[in-house]
Image 1 (cartoon, rainbow, N blue to C red):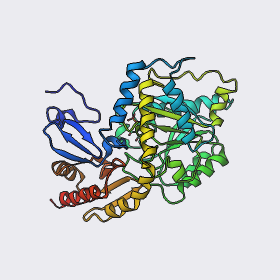
Image 2: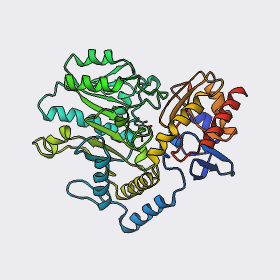
Image 3: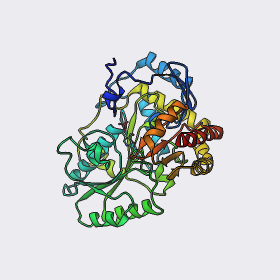
Image 4: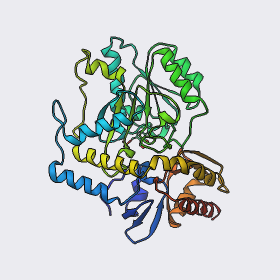
Length: 397
Ligand code: PLP
């Protein structure tokens, strides 16, 4: 019997039936019995540079041997945190951005939500307190993240959630305009492409229209780039792909490709200004591991790999191949893709996921009826064929 209470798991079904992974290399992982699987989901959308990179392990070891971590509260800092903030700021699709580190996506969303509310209070307009989010959205499991999420079962049974949050349909610009018109909206917060809600790319023109409304109504635009950040859509950030500039955005996952937990909120000058140059006082918020030296050192090594191997470009080049192959899957109800993100909608997803595991492919169900496809960026076209063949085989089984 296991003592490990798994996240997002029905322990009655899972306990004692665990699938234990032991090692990984590129887009593949092996279980404790030596069986090989294609990691079609990039674990939880994060194994972007692929598994088994020694260089990242060595970066962690070198930093730990020197100084594993030190508090970054108040005046303290470590070199990797300073360097990573600089590097992320340079990559960010926002001029002159500053970077607030966290230990993952949920902490980033929590930080972003608190920051936008605190911002409007700081500039003397606390009536702007509502945060608008989208149905089908996933923003992690913190207090705000749970409240902002638009997947009903993730919100059920927790009693009263955070007040001042409203949801609009994921694809409806008109609904956004209607809520904004009231004048009490602090921010619009959304994923460039909806991920855990089922992989839904935005309708054509959606993001530029929302960004325009944000400007017209003086609403802050917050992108949750936890999945899309650092290359998943064939651009460094989803904001670039959709031609918009957020006021702030969250990242995690791809910043280290999951080798160690790390997240961040990247904040543009408008929101940073009252805290950095104005008289808003301090942002009374932070986590023990904000700016963790080893996590930041691994992130730097991960960015080195992405840049040296041209992995963002690789995603851009793979996108049409990936899209064409996935869209050709016989027996799928619908296939949605953007970059190296895909959702394969099926009639019997539960059965197919289990069968795929037997056939050597790891994925899971998102949005109730779709298979998540978000492989490492190093996936080969032949591996995509392997995936497609096995999905068809599993559907037909
Ligand atoms: N935001 C988005 C868009 C996500 O996809 C996730 C996780 O999948 C999160 C936030 C939460 O991140 P974490 O699980 O690292 O807390």
